[in-house]
Each structure stands twice: as C-alpha cells, then as structure tokens.
Image 1 (cartoon, rainbow, N blue to C red):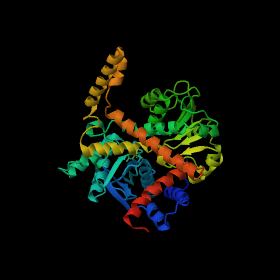
Image 2: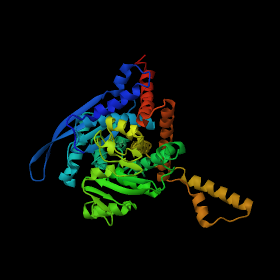
Image 3: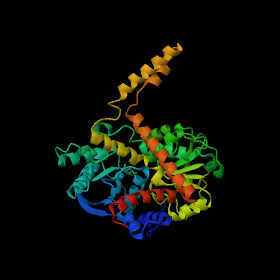
Image 4: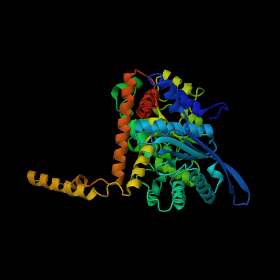
Length: 472
Ligand code: GLU
C-alpha cells in the first residue's frame, strides 16, 4: 500500500481513543494523559559493516504509559520505523494490555533497517548495540520495560537481548525477565512462538460462535468451512493461518510482499510455508493462482480477511472494494479510521487488533511470570495431578466393574504440561476479553467493536489514575 506522506499512525490511534472517550465521563485531562506518550527515547548509533564502511542507524524505544509497570511491547526491525510509528504502536500496547488484563503499561521499540540487507552476524551486532543503548538510559529491565518480538524480530533477537542485558547486570536473579519471546533453551515459555496466531484463532472462534451475530452477516456459526484470506506470512500470518486451518477453516489466499497465491479449494498452510522456505517465494505453489499484486488479494471474495502484516493496509481508498464479511486484525493498525467507517457502513464486522492480536503479549506475561518465579508451569503439580486422576479412574473402574481402554485411560490420567497450561490461560483470556467487548458493544449500542474495546481499556486505565487521586 503506497503510504501517504501525511499519514500519521499515532493520530489514527488517538482518533480511535477520542471516539471511545465520548462514550465515557472521564475528565478531558485524564483522557489527554492516557493518550500521551510518557517517555520517548530516540537515538542514533554507528555500526561497522563487513566491508569496513560505517552506517549510522536510527533506534527508538517509547514508553507510552507507566500506569502499570513494567512497560511492555515488541521491538520492530523495519524500514517503516519512525517516531510516529513507534509512538502509535506503544500506545496500542497500553490499550491491548489493559483489555487483556495483563499488568503492564504499553511500550514499543524499533530500528529503522531492512533486515534483508544484513547478515545474521550484523543483525546480532545491531541487536546487542541497541540493547546497550537501552541499558545505558535505564530503558530495559524486568521491572522497568520488557521488550518482545515484533515485525522483523524473533526468538533469536530476544536471546541476544537477554544475553546482553545479563552481561551488564551480573548477579541479577531475575535478569531473564528483561525480555520475552526468548527461545525455550534461554528461559522462554512453551507456546510463545505461536501465541499471537493461536490467540487470533481463539478470538475468531469466539466471534463466530454467536448465532445472532452471524445471522446478521449471513454466515453460519463456527470456523469450519469459513473461507479465509491472510495478508502476511510471517509469525502472525503463518500461525494464524495454521491454527484456523486446524479448526476446519479454508485458507483460500495468502498475500506476501513478493505477491500472493489463491486457491478456492484451500491451500495447505504448512506445505506452502515449506515451499516458500525452499524457493524463497510464495508464488508458483502447486495449482494455486499467482496474484502478482498481492494488494488485490485483499479485495477477493471471502468470509474472513486477516490483515497480519503492517499498519495502514485497508484505507479509505480500498475499503469500498473489500468483500470480506469479517475483518480480523492480526497486525497492529491495518485498518485506518476512514476505512473502518466505510467497512462498518457496509455491515462488515471489524475485530480490532487490540483484542485479536493480544495473544502475543498475554503469553509474554506468562513467560515473564515464569522467569520471575524461576520454575516452569506444571513442574510442581503435573505428577500429583496424574496420580489423583489415576486414583479416580481406578475407583470408577472398580465401582462400575469395567476396564477402560489404554488410550482412554491415558487421556484421562494425563496431567497438564507447560504448553497445556499456557494455551488454557490464553484461551481463557481471549474468551473473557471478547465477552467484555461484546457486552460493552451491546450496552452502548455501538457498531464499532474497536470503540467498545477501547472503552473497556480506557476505563481500566482511568481507574489506576483515579485511585491515585491525581484526577478528581
Ligand atoms: N509485538 C507484539 C505485539 O504487538 C508482542 C508484544 C509483547 O509480547 O510484549 O503485541
């Protein structure tokens, strides 16, 4: 999507807040405080390239709100990174955490680079240097500000961040909690890699479970058979598509920057992922049709469209041509305020980012808790639970004079491991938040689910300030 030079993502986010604030009675000053970015750290740092030349890179970390601490949010490596983008993303983190009910303020960071132009060694150098800049200004720490992956970064970068941080903080017992999204071997948590995609699936599954809501859209309930188009085949896009496919949805289109592929009979997500890894392109996949200009794929007929790449993808320009019945925001800010109005007018259900992609930060919260407690989930009680289950099974077998098959017995006896507990906590969070948003939507008789979600978030943040007695 060509970017308008006057486009401000941060202004878009603030417009969404203002729209929601009108439905509350909070004083204007309080809304002003909620919207403001509390601390903005911009820095330039030099790196020596492999050919001996130097480059000066632009880095950011924005802490939007400290109403809860630490602050939390990803680190983006992308050419789109600028102050406006990082502020918008940090603000979204605040609202997202409030809605998911995880006790963090919002933050975000970024380095303005195209990762494709750097070797792994150079990316390590950049990540470690970026981390040192954060340490220098006290912008990172398990109780201060906790980064995580975002567009262009992943578990590998998080491991470098944790390692750099602990090198500078010897003896700090909780140092691994300075960042989340780490590999399992570096104190990560099971389920974090796929968390945003799984959360998105739980969220959509919840949204399509209400018959009266689906009747309005002319859809049946359930994910089974729903035709889905996904924009983006990175962490969020890939795991969302996979999780939706596992629930019986048909992934008919996937759009990436090199183009898109479309198959009305459904693509095999894992096989397509393997194809892309091998051929370095999503195009020319089996019988699928190539869509050279992948933006066009967003306008194809489908039940659910999941923009899971970057912000500003569905705008006032292309919104009138969107044919999806549901737009589920996997990325942060993919739909502009203008576009949302157009979609809502057309009767499209827009499920907002601050809800639908909150699975990532939710599981980040579990990882942070694991790091602070220094014990994996399930370690203390898995065996105890299994022993109790076994006793129960044996008692039932005795009382009813039956013997269960080995398979049933195994399923009944099995105690929860770390992944089970993480997924259970994630599903619980997504289902609860949806309920809160839907209740607000009904109570205020709103069209926009984003406005409803924002009201829930603002109310929760407002309470922190009001309880401090800062505002009347
Ligand atoms: N970058 C992710 C997001 O935008 C995850 C943030 C986190 O886990 O802290 O929600």
